Image (cartoon, rainbow, N blue to C red; front, side, top):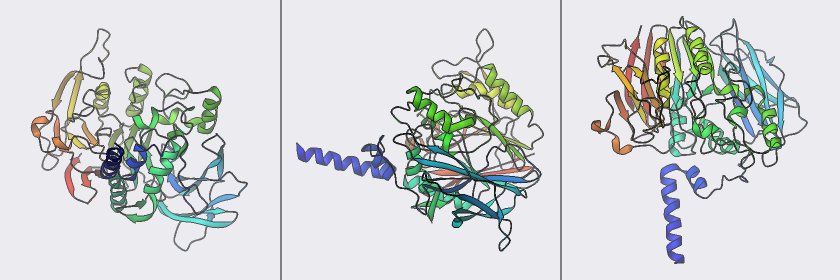
Length: 493
């Protein structure tokens, strides 16, 4: 009996390592349970510095970026400096501020931030972080680009599994040299905890190494903007996992979403003792719950980011009115993109009954959204340009029953992204092959298993989306971790 148990144990370890790398091994043996604490980043940091857009949704005459890092809870003087050209004079950045986390099992630690301002749009600059007057960290970054400045972004989802696939995608992303990265949810597995970020996210996307088997020093130079997925916000019991909901602690993105009240409908409600809840709310500040939805401009594009987890009912007029107002105000932008985790239209067997985001389709069409980026399904899919009319109840609301939203779609099958480059409808991309275990590999190449709205389906490899944007043309490529291009299409005005 003991021999058989050992053989089963060895088999579990081997399969886990093959499917998901070290992260799966930890998951199987619960090494990342409530008491697990990963190692610090070193160099005086618990988390090394990384750049964020911050609460800057709109363009200014000059630009700024926010530098974030984590360090021990000590009486230490931290500062940030920047220079605009190699060899130029260093200038002081904004004052470093911090929040102290003393929660049992999580702290003590400090979450630091400082702003580098007065940047020319699209300009490269160098910043360094100093502790007690000594420079500990230095990196280059680039300010947000403004209208008329071509830019490139990379999009993917479902990466934070500490897998070889995730490391390869991080490496390939850095090779693409994007101006920013958009992640369509499920940032870390499997509970959205701070310690999962420390173990499965920052060491890969902000690695000191640049290699397919390690990751890349991406976050220190490239802003990453993110949409919340189910694995990011659905674990909310702060008694069981006091470091849950780390989404609201480790990111700094625009605070222009529709929901700002703690405990409001359509927000990730908190569970646990009042003391644990209040400690989290105090740490998160204005980010919770507002930062779950937000919008921003970059180059010639406007972005709208939505929280489409199950507690958010996008049939509610308050949410729909905010979305309509945001998109209506962006009609002068050459391009409009929307990102949310759960895709409305896909052909995978996995999550086939999760269609609730289809109730957004008519708003997206009304305001001429060009592409919707989603994750959740761990593969790549592209729809034909699509228009959708959902079935409605007597009050006129789209009917969503047990996740399914029936209706009628109209497809633009003439669009091929090559000779015909002006789509009639919204293109829906699933780019969820960012590193977690792939879904539905058996469907790859099986056209008979696809819905008629599916134009491209790649489920046998991890991949990322590379998009080049100027005022009159989008070039969209899907690239594997090995650099193979598996899809390409162009949209023109």
